[in-house]
Length: 177
Image (spheres, rainbow, N blue to C red):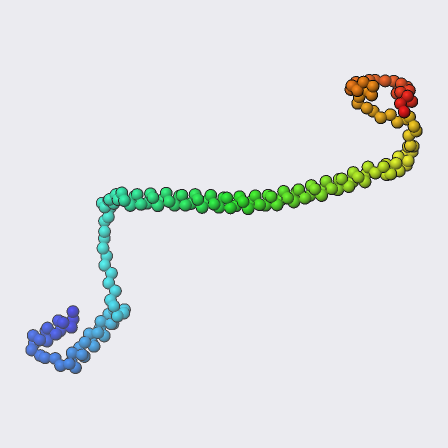
């Protein structure tokens, strides 16, 4: 506003300006303006006090419906995502369980094979005969061995257990051939 007021006052006084004088005047005014402010543009701050305590937001049913639909869609998406994630991790867990059970099965099979080999080695008649001779046992004499049978040979019906005297067993053994 300063250059305009100077130009108006100069016009009133009846003086006319030349181009050189106007440029010099503008330079001095610009230098004074630059000295008074911090940059090429002035910084202006206005303080405005607003009281919004009496404002009430109007209900918008369309926006409420949109937000509700979005929330429902987000919950459904999250539920599907969690279901997929649960199934994925459960399948991985089941895979580990299957591998562990396969390993356990192989261990049990190997143990069973070892037990069968041990049983075969321990039940060899030559080994049993050798150990019996080491213990002082002898080969049974004919008629000394009596095989127990669960049925009576004459009638074919099952026999009941009977208590017999030790001498009676020896007599019965001599009758059986």
